[in-house]
Length: 453
Ligand code: UD1
Ligand code: CA
Picture: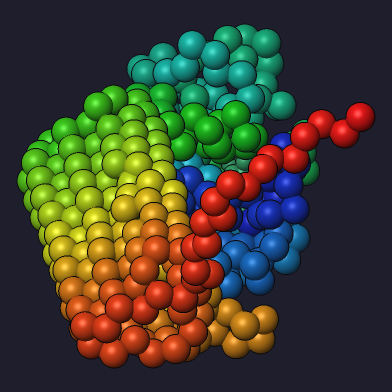
C-alpha cells in the first residue's frame, strides 16, 4: 500500500505574537515543522506534501535542505480546503495521512496504527481530555460508533460537555478524500471548509469510521502560543535525556540538559548540570562535561574533560585534553591529544599540539603550535594589526614566559624560549632565548617622595 502524507502548515499562528511563521519557531534547535517532517519521513511515505500559506516563502527556505512537495494555499479557508489543494499531487492508489505542522509529539506507533486502520475507510486520532474546550468534539451514536465531529464554535452546550476530542490527525483511502472533500460545505460559524466533515459524509454513505486513541495528551498537543511551545520543548528535552541515559550517558540531572541539535555520545560519558549542546556535538568514550558548559558543533575525544563554565564552538578537543574552567574555544580551535587550555583562555583558529599547555589568562588566535609547548599566563598573540590577521607559529618544546606579547606574523622555532614580559616582534630561532623588555635598574639609596606641606 502506498502512503501519502499531507502536512497542514498554512495557518498564521496569531497567538504566537511573532513575525516568524509559527511552524518555524525552534524546538530542540530545529523548526517545529521539521520535527513533524521527520516523523513523516520515518513512516516511509511515497511523498510528503506540505501545505503552506502564511510566510510560505520563509517556510520553504527554512526547510530547503529536505525534499518536500510544497503546496501553496493562497487563502486559508479551512483544513478541508487545505487538503483539497494537495490532492492533485497525490497518487490515486494510496492511503493519505494528514498531519499538522504544529503538532510534533505524536509517536510513530500511534500513526502506524492510524494508517493501518484506514485501509478501507477513514480513521481518526482522538483523545479524552479533562479540559476539551476549543477542540472539535467526537459525536457517537447509541452503538458507540463515530458519526462525526462538531467544532467547539458550532457545538451545543450538551456537545461541549463531550470529553472526547478530535486531534485533527486523520487517515483515509485517497478515494474517500477524492469523493467527500468536494462535497464539504462551509456553512458554519467560521465559514470554513472543515476537514472532519468528510467523516460524517462517509458515515452517511454507510461507511464505518474507525478511531484510534492517543496514548497521552502530549501526542496531540498543538502549539498555538509560546506556553505550548515551551511545553513541547520540555517534552523533547525530556525524551532526549532519557534516550541519552539509555545509551550509557550519565546525566547529573535529566531535567537540566538541553540538546538543540544532535548529541552523539560513546559509552561512559558524564554530563553535569545545565549544559547546552547545539548543532552537531560528538563526545568520545569517558568524556566528562562540567556544569554550565555550552558546546556548539564540537568534537571531544576519549577521556577528555571540559571543566565548568566553558564555551566551545566549532572546536575539536583531542583525547585526554583538559579544557577550562572558564575557557572559550572559538571556531577553528584544534587541541591535539593531552593538550590543556585553562581558565580565562580564549583561542581562535588555533591548533595546539599534543601535551601543550595554555593554562591561564591568554589569547591564542591564528596560531600553529607544536607539541610540548608551555605558554605562560597572560600571553597574547597580537594577530590583528587593525587591518589584517597574521599567523604565529611555535615549534615543538617552545616556552613562552608569562605576560608575553607575540606580535604576528611571528615564528618561534623549536625549543625557542621567550623571557617573561617580552614583546616579541622578530623570529626566534631554534633554542634561542628572546628577551624583549626594559632592563631592570636598581637605584640604591633612593628616597620616597614625602607628603607635600
Ligand atoms: C482543528 C480541527 C478540530 C481539532 C483541532 C485539533 C477542523 C475544522 N478543526 O481545529 O476539530 O480539534 O484542529 O487541534 O479541522 N490550516 C491550514 N489551512 C487552513 C486552516 C488550517 O493549513 O485553511 C492548518 C493550520 O496551520 C494548523 C492546522 O491546519 O496546522 C489546524 O488548523 P487550526 O486553525 O489550528 O484548527 P483548529 O481550529 O484548532
Ligand atoms: Ca489549532
